[in-house]
Image (cartoon, rainbow, N blue to C red; front, top):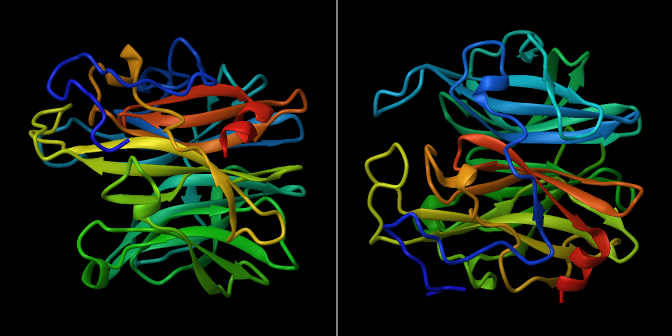
Length: 333
């Protein structure tokens, strides 16, 4: 979709999400729902365990001064229906001390049997790292492994494949690939601690509506036809100016979808040629920190066949879209 017609500098956005997507008429979580200091509430991981929905969301707090926020925390929320959320007053924290880590953010949740595992990005004093951990009592994160820098956007499959855990990842090889030319990879582990057999799944050049970078989004869900897998895709438009609170924001984030082989998750069975979700609602665009940013972090397949997709919009609010699982599979050509 490179070169699609858009009104870059106006309120009107001419592209829209795929026809099979149904969006809620409002965000499911904003800073107004949070009982502690919050400014941007977005990029949440969501899973379902014992009939209850669990969300861990990123919260950037403090008054924006044109440079940076005061800090980032991870909040926890619960829901009975996946739409109305109650935010816990207690924040997530790390088990024990790790003086190397400055902050953790962009969580992804995966329920495996009776436990919830969390993938996250973390800024350290020696590079950007992706981590895998285990939740304890919805209050603490036990870190199981940290991948070497620079890497982020990890997403853990909900079950082992051929005896190993499987992890989607996005390494960031600035020197060898050029700035912001990042692709989507997969690796395996016998124990969630030691990771290896890293393989490329898809390159930027394989996505028509990306020219900057791609990477994992929500953890995949298993269907009879394959692993239904979301990804994010980024295009750069140098002609763009102010799009949100920043003086200049040139990137456009969209969500795509593909189907991976059940026995070989490195093999793409098919993918949709068009974006699945884009910013096309007022609440996704107005007053956003960065306009035109969609980033899915949670996907749940219900018994009814409905798929709930949770996504951050414009790095500001958390939103929900739904679709029928058979429709999603059918558009992965």
